[in-house]
Amino acid sequence: MYDGIIKGGRWFDGTGAPSSIRHIGIRDGRVAIVSAEPLDETGCGTVVDANGKWVIPGMVDIHTHYDVEVLLDPALSESVRHGVTTVLLGSCSLSAVHVDPETAGDLFGRVEAIPRPYVIEAVADHKTWRSAHEYVEALERLPLGANIASFLGHSDIRAAELGLDRATRHDVRPEAGELAAIERKLVEALDAGFVGMSSQQLLFDKLDGELCRSRTLPSTFATGRERKRLNAILRERRRALQGGPDVARPQSLVSMAAATLGIWRKPLKTSLLSAADIKAIPAIATIFPVVARLLNALGGDFRWQHLPVPFEVYSDGIDLPVFEEFGSGAAALHLSNQLEERSLLLRSESYRRQFRKDYDKKYGPRVWHRDFFDAEIVDCPDRAVIGKTFGQVGMERGGVHPVDAFLDLVVEHGGKVRWRTTISNHRPHVLNRFAADPGIQLGFSDAGAHLRNMAFYNFGLRLLRRVYEAELAGRPFMTIEHAVHRVTGELADWYGLEAGHLRVGDRADAVVVDPARLDGSLDAYAEHPAPYFGNMSRMVNRNDDTVTAVFVGGTYVFGNGKAAPILGDRRTGRFLRAA
Image (cartoon, rainbow, N blue to C red; front, side, top):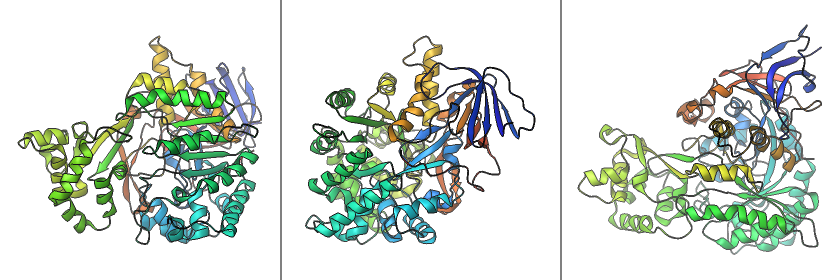
């Protein structure tokens, strides 16, 4: 009777409704029955015993940069193994729908820390599409492991229509025909089922390559008129704008947030980056919920995106993306492909003087806390410094300024100096408040990007652990049912996707979680080589005893740290079109 059965688990349907012990029968890729009584297993190909475990809908990751990786490794196993069965591409104004391979490399290489040569090669080798419809068809020909949905990147369509050079010049405005063509590209993508458009105004995201190196992304050059016309299309079609305001220019946040308001018109579904408890500006954590409540009370449809775990980042030497936010850091990253020139720069006293000045500026909008006493060295050829902060190293070397201690080690050892720090989401009580706030969406994993800087593939499991531990301690801040809803059905419903629920008739995207293994293994550091990126050792998460089974489209694809043979060999996921 059934292709698969998940028996005896604590079942969550993804709506926030009370959970219960149930047996789930799967047929033809969908949930055929949810029964209080055991099911007949005769002829069933896959039976999973979920006794003592939770059975939840597959989680939804609303912010990834898998646009390149999906072409090279469509299984997307780093997300699937942690119970994520639906991912959204096209974040931060970046997508690979319309741009040529070289431009894709320039867009993704530095902003998302994906090696530029592999971006160019991947797009050149796999691109058969010339439109959003053809892009969707190309994705559906791949052996997708997870389901895919997508934004269309504003920088993508702007660069494709104007050329990267003209798209990143302040003295160039699109001609009437060019702007109309940009609009047509957005309309066509929405017709193809894209969930909306992403647009970035953050000025420390910089281009790679040589032609336009260190210019900001094309979307940051769009005029208010251009953004308004594109927003009008999204508003009329009830699709979402994902935006990234510039933290150094509050007016960009105000304009992007206020666009949601629907006075005498439909509200614009708007999701902005990001609600974070930033170490550098702790007071700002109180503002995010207030802004969302105010805008929604005035008739908007507004959400902040939020990573519901501590934002811990790693860096090899000076190659940390947040260094782009201040002049001396951006100058060093500008020379990331000219290592000899960079080394000379880092030795220069005038450069160091500027870096110290930037470092000592502790006020004003910023992301990095600028505290080398809060930056631990985790690896270095000089074993004596491992486990210490750069500030401590400076003190041990006769009171050297922390900046000079950092630069001395980078000059001597380059990228072999590996260090880490937490830049935001460090206070548990603020994380708990954000996790339960209806104006905040939980996601923002950046999966597929920043491969040497961070790994948040298991963010949903880490949220469930925090909620479960609070419940066990008698200090609950939300129910487990609510937490499951927050990372499944709530997100799918807002973006109009057929995902995130586990009721009769729903797609059988299901995850079996062992609550006893929602433990410290979720925080463990791990690396794994990515063969499609030249065997780069990427940061990953490895807590394989926590997720014991993952189904996508009714097919068992992963469990207990091992992929099923079908994963990445035959298509189990599909492109989900926005309703």
